Length: 181
Image 1 (spheres, rainbow, N blue to C red):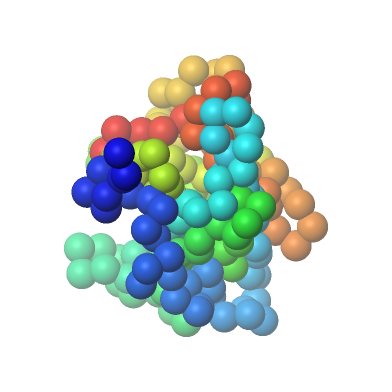
Image 2 (spheres, rainbow, N blue to C red; image 1 turned 135 degrees about the vertical axis):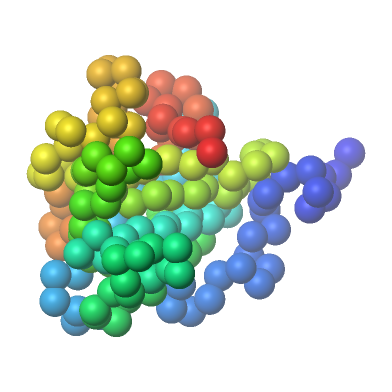
């Protein structure tokens, strides 16, 4: 039986979803810009060449360019949203800036993080995770603290050259922690 778009979120992602500047949350040359690069891997550890990574984040001051955020719009040219399909080797890249600290529903500060949605073949729905940064203070983040200590590393982006490396493992050993939203 052949799959149809109603049965899986991929491999139909390349039809109309990517756009040329989708991976650029900020323009090249933006002060403080960093690359988030990584790969998407299946349960056997093989690259997923037809996945889509979407990111959503606050600006460096911790504000969202959204009407529901009373703190206002960001001060720099900043889209807050990125979208990048994986290439033949399952790799993606997003150019952005480190997000600011935002409050959670109780008003407590969250660590700097980027929200990530992953769409791929074989998934009936997107999976959602977060990127935290290994070189930032993550100690007070309630969401990260709710993850078993042995699995928190799957949410940490590691410093790498001009940015960070964050791989997504959809299943199996080292599976990325995904959240029900």
